[in-house]
Image (tube, rainbow, N blue to C red; front, side):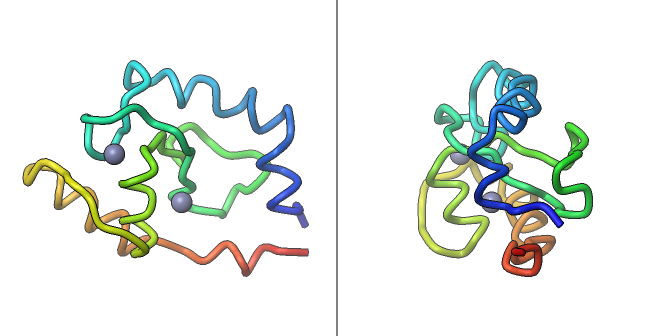
Length: 97
Ligand SMILES: [Zn+2]
Ligand SMILES: [Zn+2]
């Protein structure tokens, strides 16, 4: 079992997410408007050995929206994608040690 909080602060995580953070020229992969700041897990299935498609580089605003904790501005055309992300949202608490 991976300790989630320790893992997302690790060098391993930083290196694994580097290509993800560069993928959209540094822009948030949800809104395409702001720079990404966080890496969101679309699934925790492979926690500790994620595939690039398990992860999304997102801005704080979109990240909060995915986790239903905030509001923000997004292009209407991106809404279906945001809804999809909200629907597949899993709670990380299941993976704590
Ligand atoms: Zn965004
Ligand atoms: Zn997230």
